[in-house]
Length: 250
Image (cartoon, rainbow, N blue to C red; front, side, top):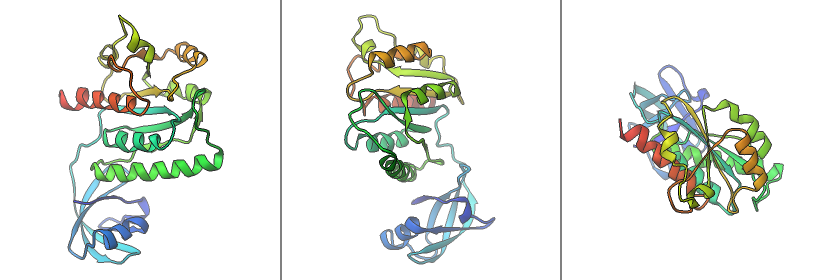
């Protein structure tokens, strides 16, 4: 069943109104009509089964049949801090990361990031990533949309670190060690409802200066398995491990 995230302005006690892209999708793509049913998500994280009353390409109105009892969000809030990668890799990370349960994404400028965003490009990219996160949340039947933070500098990222309970760095160096620091060691210390920040470097990895700063801020350096992962693979690996640990081993 199709699912749509509806802003606060579209809700009353008994009805929902969908506009813009959602109305176009319902009327022109899905070709739905009156009495068809959809799921509408409120921004507070609740979802309701709704029955369409009227359809136009500009606006779709529906009545709320009942509120659903759903538990789709990961028990641990994982934020992915991703150094700007090349091409459309960040699109992939946000799309698949959303499907896997990420709570938020923070793009940041790594010293070895090849890609450079000026303010105009950054604003445009963030809007695109927000759209990707919304669509991926709908497709994967989540009850909330991950936050896409504005791009940060590396120093700004470090200043935000005190908001989290656990700080983790995907470390290529640990993957190469004979006696590495294992990811499982820190995962066993994480509890439901805690906030976790995972920091992933760009294609060229972290600079020595960045590594020293992360160590100074007490980030936990760990390998993500014994193999060297691409920058777009590392956050998805971590989210998969977290989902297995906190959602499948209950």
